[in-house]
Length: 383
Image 1 (cartoon, rainbow, N blue to C red):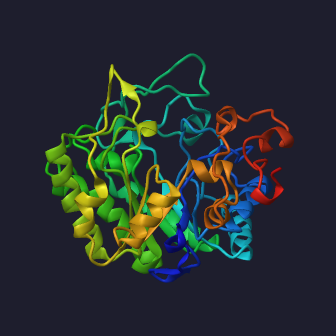
Image 2: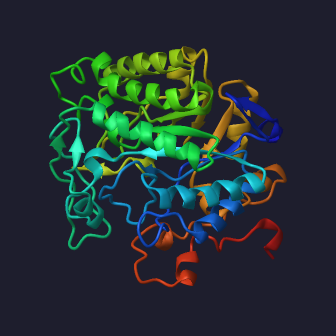
Image 3: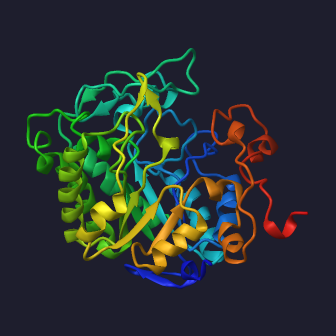
């Protein structure tokens, strides 16, 4: 039974109608270049009809060349206006929305068209390339490259602050800081990607500094009660992962410091094999029970989680007080009415169209772009 997922909840300043939450999902439909469009409005409106909270797909805070072509940005007025159309649609459907702000760090590529257009190098905490992976839209099979070490990390902190300002103008209800996925904040936290010897690296306190500085400036813009952060202590994706003892030491400290800032929520991702590719013959992640390992630290914020929960397992975690709500990702892709399906015991077994989850949509018609995006069935329309 899943009744516990359908109790309203107050998270910071935001009241949610249920605890079936939609995680950030990069979908590559911001065509022609980084600007949210009408098709995206339709996609979000579909899911807002039942979701308790929608976290936007990762929104780029500056022009950079990602492995995700046509990912949306929020650094100019046209993008802000595009997002305003989406947030209006989400609110009209009765849901709330947080903007996930995102910088990829070393996961960008210098040959990507947007990276070239930016005139900037690929930045990271240290000049260490991620291993494994390949870029889906560049010729051949190029992998990650050695990035340029960031000279002054506060420059990138300032970009996060401006993105938070822009997200407020776009009508979001709050901000989720992306601290997972092997992207910039995660790269600062991890000793394998951050070998700096200044005040931004070395000790776990120094490696935590960048993420904490980002949170502080975003809180300055929004207030703590409208800010969340997503973390993935197990690592794996984009070549992340420290030995278990160091992982526990780092994240115990970082989460405690985050909690002292009093954000609305801390979302901790559980281990997922899907996000743990094999690199040089073995998986990278450091598996451990993240809810058990870190929940006791969180005193001020609401603890949320994601990572392959079944609806029944999610309801049990919530009813036992282990967490307060659950984010789903892939289930929301193929079930636009996921919360209704869970509530009324309908199947959640529609397969994801992996051919059209993401990719380079250049030259495709609008109908082509809908495939695997807005054409999934609603339960009431299924035979």
